[in-house]
Length: 209
Ligand code: PRP
Ligand code: URA
Image (cartoon, rainbow, N blue to C red):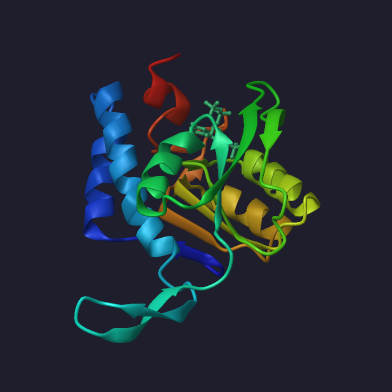
């Protein structure tokens, strides 16, 4: 699918299978999500531009590669986005963080925003928006519009599971934003859940219902 990268690394796929199982405990689900997020972070950042700096090793001076540009921003769509955020920060501890509080109204499936806090200067930074689930794509499209309204221009979206319907809606609304996902599942059901999916990601992470 145009603009969509499926991260099919064997470790990602193995851990995702464990996460999907209904027997997986809250503690295991959270641990697996953190582990998988470091692997996803590795893939979503694999083409970042590098520059060089001159350093002294204990042996001699050399010109050595470092990331180019301003520190990137990880934007987490709460609550479940935080499960991906933690592992991403393990790999990129200097990243700035934005939090977008949003939940789906269970009847309308429309997102309700309850919190927004982002670094001031989004214009010149790469923003990686994280949320494990892209179902109807209502939450993601609203969160991305919010970031664009605040000046964000260079954005990537990272999730664990996406639906074909959600990807179509996302691409219609934000054709400029690439999607990275570990799986494109079969479909969205009539209640807005991903099938076969893994259930409600936030509830499984935090042991709520
Ligand atoms: C889940 C998920 C996404 C959203 C996806 O959040 O984490 O944000 O649903 O669905 P959509 O693509 O149809 O908008 P939820 O609303 O359950 O909130 P939570 O993370 O606080 O549990
Ligand atoms: N949000 C979830 O957490 N799970 C789904 O299947 C759909 C939306």
